[in-house]
Amino acid sequence: MNIYLIGYMGSGKSSVGRRLAKALEYDFIDFDDYIEEKEQAAISEIFEKKGEIYFRKKETLYLKELTDSNLSNKVVATGGGTPCYGSNIDFILSDNIISIYLNTSVQELTKRLWNERSKRPLISNQESIEVLEDFVRKHLFERGFYYNQASKTFKTDGKSTDKIAKEIVATLF
Ligand code: S3P
Image 1 (tube, rainbow, N blue to C red):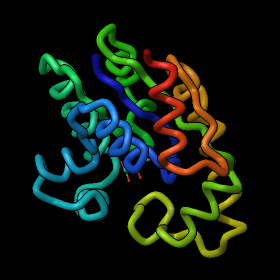
Image 2: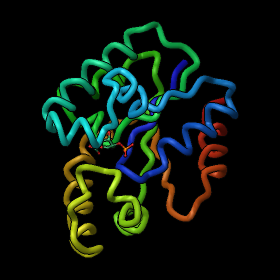
Image 3: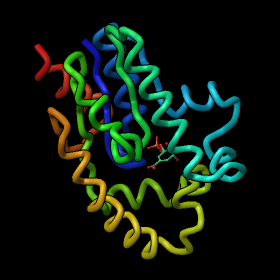
């Protein structure tokens, strides 16, 4: 069995994924790192030099490659946009994958993302926290259509990484 975590930037997919993999004794794959390794470039550099369309094409290609590779006992933290382009959601909803949506509120996401915005090409130009909050609200609403197709959803506000991972483990067995 494999677990794919989906959700907006800043929802904790990587930190929860790492903790979850440890608890389950599964391997952990951070899909952004996977793309960076394949492309030999940072995500921000790919966006800057080649543009978002190029990134989305590669994201789909590598998701297909990863998901077709007879995966077993893996926890994969996807990128925030991964389920929302092409037919990526169909790969994530494959039979050998449990898809989990980490559902974080707009307010919590905005707080977390404001300090980290320079690393994230889609939000690096937001000029104030209020503008960022409006952007996140609209963007999350659009992406909700994909995120809400996950087989399980966990609310994350006010919970530690450890608590979320424990809650997930408790529903798996
Ligand atoms: C993106 C999220 C990022 C990364 C890229 C695009 C998105 O991943 O894949 O910057 O479209 O939401 P994280 O969710 O890990 O920040």
